[in-house]
Image (cartoon, rainbow, N blue to C red; front, side):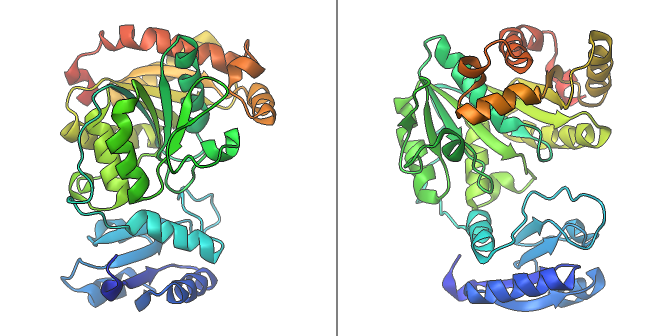
Length: 354
C-alpha cells in the first residue's frame, strides 16, 4: 500500500479484540479513521465511498453486503460457536503478516501474468481444516513416484504448510528439491510470485495448494497478491480439486465458488473431494456422493482422514507412501488420481454449472 494512504477502519464486536487490533495497526503505521460498533454507523461513516480498507470480525453481521477497497475478515471472539474465519491474529506479527498478504499492491507492470505452459493441478478448500495440504503433498509425491518432475507450490498466504512440515529452508527464494523426489516452493510476496511466473517454464508439472479458496467477482481485477496468484493459477490449471467437509453449507458455498471460477476458466475439469473424520461403508459413501452431486453437479471423491496414518507421517515429516504405504487415505488418493480423469468425462459442462 502507498504509505500516504494507509488508512483503515475496524468493525470488531469484541472490544478487547478491537482494542488490540486498533493499537497494533497504529504501531504498524496505519491510521485507524473509524472504529465501527454497528453496521448502521459504518454505513453512515463511509457514505458512498468504497475506497476504504476494513478489518472486521466475522461476527460483525451484515458487513459482507457492503463494498470496500478491501475487506479482511478475522475470527471473532464474541460468539460462543466455533468461528469459520481463517485469520486469527493473536500477536502483532500475526496482524502484520495478514495485512501484508491481503493488501500488498502489485502493478501490472511489475508482474506479467503469462499462463503456465505445462501441466498444473490446483487444490483449494471450502472452509478450514479439511486436510487440503496433506492431500496436495501426497498427490505431488504420488506423481513423482511415476517419474514426473513435480514442483509443489504453497500459495496458502496466511497458513503456509510445507516448509515447516518438510523442514525446508529458502523455498521462498526458489524451488528446493526434497528427498522424496519432488520440489517445493512457497509464495509469500510479489517477488516470490514473480519468480514463480518467470521460472515456471523450468518445471513440467506444478501442484498448487491454494488453501481456503476465497474468490469473488473482483478477483480477476484485484491487485492484491492473493488476487493475482489465484487468477494466474485458475487461468493456467489443467484441473482443480476442491475439498470440503460433508455438510450442506460447504456444498452451497462450493456451488457459488464454481460460478466465479467458470468466469476465468470455463471448461477446466473440477473435482469435488469430501473429507470425512472417520471411515464409512460403501453405502454411506454413495449416499454422501449423491447428496453432494445434487447440489454441485461435480464428480465426487470421498477421503477418510485416517488420523493414525497422518500422525505417523507427520512424526516422520514425510508423505504417506514412505511412512504408511498401506494407509486408507493413501489408497483413496491413488484411486482418485487414477479415476478422476475417467469420471470427469461422464459429466457435461452443463452439469458442472447445474
